[in-house]
Length: 490
Image (cartoon, rainbow, N blue to C red):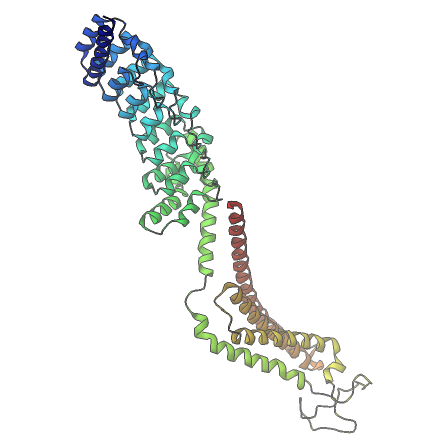
C-alpha cells in the first residue's frame, strides 16, 4: 500500500512538471485538488528546478500566476546553478511573468547565481529592454550594487554583448554617477569606453562619447597605461578603426550653435567640455605637427653626394686660414714684401705695432695687432672645421643615416658647420675693415647690413636645430615610456 502511494506521488510529480512545461492550468488544479500538499513535496525530490522555474522559462503566464498564488515561496527557490525563477524569466524576456514575480518578491532582483549574475545582468546582456526597465524600477540599486567577479558592471555586459538599447536605458538611470559610468574591470582596468573601442562597437562608442560623464573620463588609463583612443593604435588600421577615430575627433568639439540651444543646467557641462575640447584640440595639433617632422621620402639618398661635396668644400675653406691667415704673417726681419692684403710670405705689421718675442716671423699679423678678435675668429673657424669633418665622417661611415639618432647627429653637425662658418666670416670681416672707417657712416651701414644677413641665417639655423631637438626629445621620451610600460607588464 505504501509502495503504491509513493508510486502515485512520483507520477503526480512527473505530471506536475509536464503541466508546467505545457502551461496546463487545468492539470495543476486537478493535481492540487487530489493532493493539496503536492507543491510542498517538491523539496523532497532530487530535482533542483521547481515547476515555477520551468513555467517562467517557457513563458506560461497563467500557470506561473497560479503557482505563485498557491505557494509564493517558490520565487526564492534556486536551481543547481543558484538561479531563481526571475533569472530565467528575465533572460527570456517574459515581461509579464517578470512583473508577476516582482510583485510577489522584489528582493529576487538582488539574488546572484553561481556566476554572480543577477536577473538584471541576464536581461541586459540579452537586450530585454522592458524587463530591464521593470527590474530597475523594482530595485534601482541593483544597477550599481552588484558587480561580477572580474569587476565588470552591467554596463560592461551591455557593451560586451552589443546591446545598445539596454545600455542607453541603464545610463539614463545612473547618468550622474561618474564613478560608476567610468568604473574599470579588474583584469585589464578597462572602462566601458575602453571595451567598446576594443570590440569596435561603433554605435556604442558614439553614444558613450555623447554622455557627458563618460566623455569627461575618456582620458582614464587602463592597466597598460592607455586611454580608450590610444587602445585603437594597437588594432589593425581598417575602416572601423578610422571611423572610431573620427568619432573621437568629432566628440572633442562642442559647437557654439549647439550650446545656445541647451538648458542652463547642461550649459555648465558644456562649459567643462570646452576645456576638455581645448586640451584635446591642442593634443591633436601637436600630433599633426609631429607628423610634419617625420622624414618623408629618400631625400638623404638623393642629396648624399651633394652634401659630401659641400662638407668637403667647407672643410677646405676652414682649413685654409690656419696656413694662410687673413692679414698674412710677419715676414722675416729686413724683408719688405710688395703691397697687398695677403701676399706670399706675409705682410709688414701695421703701423705702430712693435714686433716682440711673441710676434716673430711667420706669426699672424692680426694675432699681434688685435689678439682678442683674432682669437674669436680662430675659435669660430676651428669649430666649423671640426663640424664639417664630422659631417664627412658620418657620410662615409656606412651608418644607417635614416635612423633618427644618426639623422639628428648629421643635422646638428651641418647646422653647427654653417652657423660657425657664418660667425667666422663676421669676425674676419671686422678684422679686415680699416680702422680709419670706424667712425664713418659707411662702416656703420656695412656692419648693419652684414649683421642683418648673419642674424637671418642664424635664425633659420636655430629654427632647424630647435625642431630637430624637439623631435629627438619626443622620440626619446616615447621610447622611455614604452620601456617603463614593458617593465610594469612583466
